Image (cartoon, rainbow, N blue to C red; front, side, top):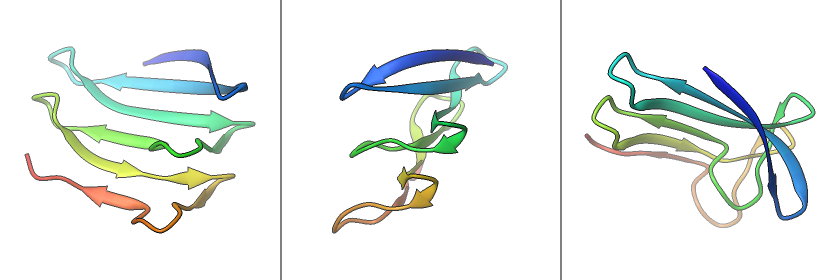
Length: 77
């Protein structure tokens, strides 16, 4: 697992990245004050072992949220 601080739109977020055994990313999560948060981009992203996106979850202030679009998207491998 890798943790880092990133800045998006002037906001400092904690980004947590986890990896599959093959080295590909398995998930990415973004936090603000230990709560799920990211504006206009997915907050939680799950990946298949081959690197393709499996799921995207949108949160704002720890609440599932996305304006006029689904807050959760599932993809087929």
